[in-house]
Amino acid sequence: MTKTPGKDSQPLVSVIMNCYNGGKYLNEAIDSIYTQTYNNWEIIFWDNASTDKSADIAKSYDSKLRYFRGKTTIPLGSARNKALEKCNGEFIAFLDCDDLWMPEKLEKQMPLFQDPDIGIVFSDVIFFNKMGQSKQLYNRQPYKAGWCFPFLLSQYFLSIITVLVRRKALDDLEYWFDPQFEIIEEADLFRRIGYVWKLAMVNRPLAKWRIRESSLTWTKHHLVLHETSMMLKKYSKIFPDFNKLYEHEINILNKDIKIDAGFHYLREGNNCKAREYLSPFKFYNKKAFIFYMMTLLPRTLFLLILKIRGSLLPMNAI
Image (tube, rainbow, N blue to C red; front, top):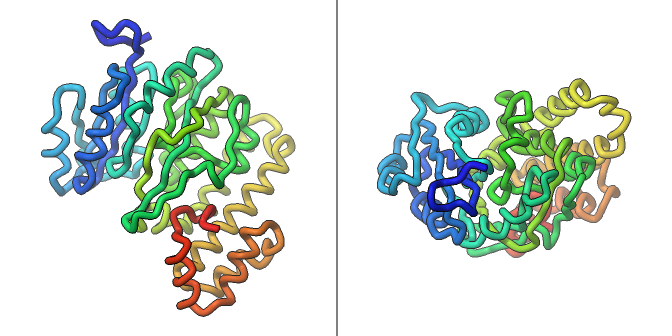
């Protein structure tokens, strides 16, 4: 195990922070790492050619934060690969520059790696927005642990800011984040790890994810369908008998991402496009039915419902 001198009982954790003009919340995010009760960590800070004060903020910390800067802005997955190349730790974690960790995150997660078959340890997470609304992810979304690739494939449930990965699980892969993806690069990576390794979970919120509608998840949601199709084609080539063994899970995944796409079009006010996606699945489950019925409402009434209920999670808002 990689250990820092004087900290023989604690393997080193490398925390990857990728930043592009993230200065607004950056101090708060970095401070949440410095307040960890688990002490043996390093921050690999990859500045994706920011033009704000992010560099000055990052460089104001001590040597536990290792600052690197790219010459040009590159896609997030590629930037995370650059940061991974700089990591010294036996375990890898991720924190975006506008999100937060609870002080006991690493302390609660690290003991679960005593099982040598565990490749990923995750936890519950709180989603919050500028209006003060918050939701705990697994109050509404199901999850599994152990050998759970089929469920991870059909109903991806991980939040990257909670994920702690065994470095060996990454090094056993042919490649890390797939640069052909803009939206699902982390889901693809963790699914490929979950195909071979077990997952473990700390059933309490250990991180807080700040919801911003300028994020890629909201602004480029139209790519999810395309990228998921690419991912499934890739898996059919790299995993033996993939289409046959996981036919049920593939069908669930395809239905859910189309329902999700319908909800996004509904948010944007394109009710016709939303109905096109939702109509075939309106009786699939309660959520799809409610989303479909919302396409029949006047825009003003729909916005009022969103305001009353909040819309932190596109697939968990209802």
